Image (cartoon, rainbow, N blue to C red; front, top):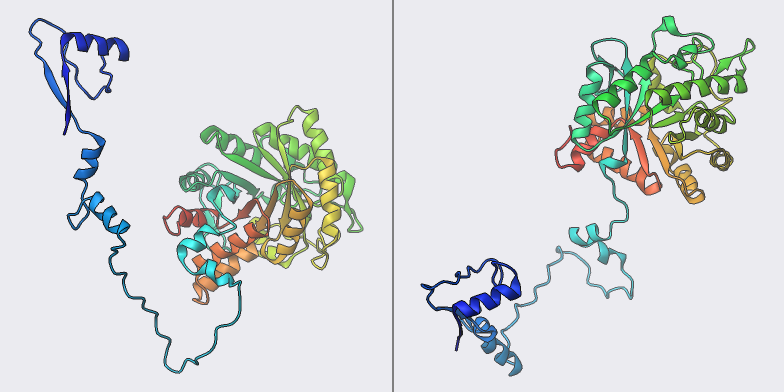
Length: 426
């Protein structure tokens, strides 16, 4: 039987005093009459817990108490029959293997596979490389479908806006420098009003919260197309190049760069850059060192994009031999000791073992660069119908993450982020 509570002016005043001025002790959703001469006594029905439970009935119309009584008496409904899916005709009848461990049990449903997935990927893991030039219009790059040399005033801003819309907030800049500005010593690299510093200032003005990485190397600015100053006998001069790189990094930091990224592979450049940045007060500017950059054939489309092919020879005297594994540990130890904040492996997918090697031997964040050749091969395979471009793209990025990469520099950044956001390829 339901109980009742009678409200009188005295009761109301008492409840208001206990529960706060003007509020009922039962909560603000109950209206409490104000005290006054014309106030009538109001009865509020309060259902007991037992009556509420009795009001809840099973789909059959029986109460919880009736169902519980049947369970106590052992009266259960008949379970549905067990039906085992039939094997195709001709399947041999065998005795099951005597195995206690069957790893496939944890892969038998989408829910289980998702629960036990060891590696995840998100747009926050991506850094989008952007090619920029002095022109107003965007120029398509033939060897890299979907990529452009972006006009630094307009096309660049549009690309960054679209990338941010799908969660990509990190960008690395690569300039196409006019031939007239290229010199043997690459002096344009540290021009405070050059293409890269201007672009950094523009981006920071329009999108102050993005992370801007820069490339520190002389090849875009060198008339010889090498990452360093070339002596007359063809030798790449190490220490003199590092001197130029320090001025380049300081110029980029002065413009607002968040992370400077020496890709030159000169010895000692990380320590020299750290000292130069600190001397100018840029203690918070990070260094992402191209720790294990291999003399790879996968860079071809990139060099077309920047018109930065070496005028003679190759880059094997400063970039690493693709056959070498242990040498990456030497570079890792040097970069860590000199003050690198992030260690990068380039290329990416063909060098998963090197990514894992650095991951296992350093506590620093590891970056991987999925280079232009990797990108173009996937694009070409997809265009020819040989592979599913989107699935291969996502698998390749997941593999880089699984190998140990914390961040991935990839031309697929915006497209992959669109997939991850449920927007398809954007």
